[in-house]
Length: 456
Image 1 (cartoon, rainbow, N blue to C red):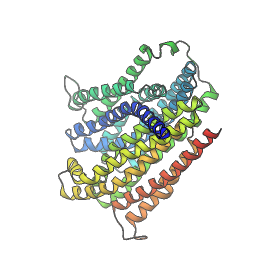
Image 2 (cartoon, rainbow, N blue to C red; image 1 turned 90 degrees about the vertical axis):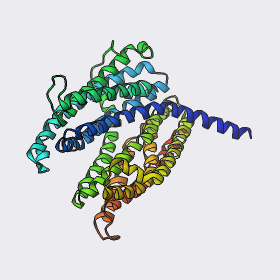
Image 3 (tube, rainbow, N blue to C red; image 1 turned 180 degrees about the vertical axis):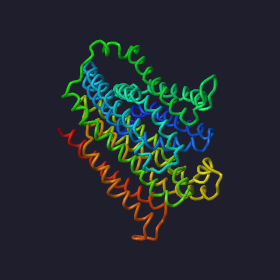
């Protein structure tokens, strides 16, 4: 009985520790996700072409951002390990090297997003739509250096377990984005009417607001004052940069693999017509919002596991990792149940069109099952990042998505090879199969890595 009570108490303590880290991250993620939602709503009032330009532009810059910001997410486990080892004074070097890398990646982003004409030409767009998309991307590109620098600062704070400041900054960004969109899209207070391109300028300004707020917090916070982060500035150091990139590059590629897969699915489904594509987009939009919950737990697990591993508490790190996965699975069971019960009502929030609504409701039922596998695989990947294990998980993600999920989805959706062609449902069944494989592979990897650490 005493052992059971101790086990329950330990479970309660670990659960509360993870949730304490995770809830501000949830709000921060939702606030940042809502910026894109607000852009879509406000641009729609400017006209269909403006909305299309933002949709196309977003499908280009989001994968670029995920790949580059994923590299910088290496800051979190690096800092968390040092904090756990009571070496907080050494974390300033990680911050400085991360900022140098962010500057380099920001320059790459500027170059890519200001030279999209060849890509847009391949899409055979109407000249006016191509021009608006290009100008939108050029505008938003000006914020990328700031956004990537802020990503390092955000990850640095999270490595210390400081997740509330990031939440507050994200909310500030959302609150600034709405009036900026209003002024720049519709040309208020003497500003030119820029339409959808105004969203790009508004987003770029918000990205710089993120950076100024992040810099201000690190400069003024009493938590970081003893570290004197800005007094002993380090130049780029090749060994530290390479170490950082070895850890971060697989994270960036893993995020790119997932994002690009959804883009490829959308392109493959385009041949089936607007109704199919609209229903698919509704399903992605809703599941993307729900995904913020397991993603936030995953980030919290990176912090918690990283700090415990840095402190040499291997058994506690393993316990935290699997407790976090249990929390994520419980949340996924709740969201899955709600999605199954209210699939049609959810679809109705997006569209009154009966054909789109019926198909979207059907896809949401399949996507409900997708949430379980997705929650497990993303939380396992987050825990593995806490162990600084990113290369093998990248391979497992690639196998799950591109070797298993996408080919099976293609066969089910667009061919009669296995069953009569199922249309968009086939890709979502493929995603369920691929992510289930990924969940098993990443859980197995986590078991092996955490057991090795415990026995070391």
